[in-house]
Image 1 (cartoon, helix red, strand yellow):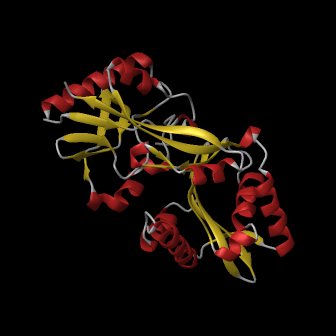
Image 2 (cartoon, rainbow, N blue to C red; image 1 turned 90 degrees about the horizontal axis):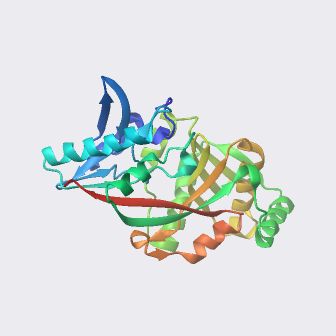
Length: 294
């Protein structure tokens, strides 16, 4: 995975296996002349194959030597494998370009050539760290409040405290719960300490807001963002995002907030998207394609 041009730690078996009991794994290894040329994190769902259901994205993971012509061959081979094994379709989620260490959109061209259908399109909000747009006036006000209140922004290992805060926020606002349980995130953070990190806004030793980041190489992904009512009043999240961009990850290319859509991409949460855009983030799409085996 480290030698790929579009892979992240999310595709490692150590990460994917934390929810192995929820999916029937059917990942593929594709070889040419005995040499691995691509991996496809996938699982079987009924009679179909899909880019792994436990991941937001996950198409073919390839190396720097991948060519457009070879990718066409890979899709043809994959369709033949599916037909031979009674798999009727492939639901394919390409890796968004912001997660590429090198350009890696050979699969998008191959999908077009194979007459795949665009089945879903989610929209995320992403900051170009090396050419940032300014924070909005409201975000700048939040930073000023955080400074006046003397908030301390630092990395934390207090996962239980943050998970209580996050769970309360999700339950109150969305009647939802975190994707990961506390035990799961603690396990993953211990397994990937350089990739999964928690940053908090603190006052008098109390965490008022927090952001969990997934380090995906060129891109830092905000997996979870949560703030208490008090944290909202004093710009707790604003201060953390500013700290991440200015101090922790100034050398990276992208900061991705994640998708702001529901109902298979058909419904845009305009308020949530606007909140992200106020940090200077702009749109990145996460696409899903449907490819028949015949």
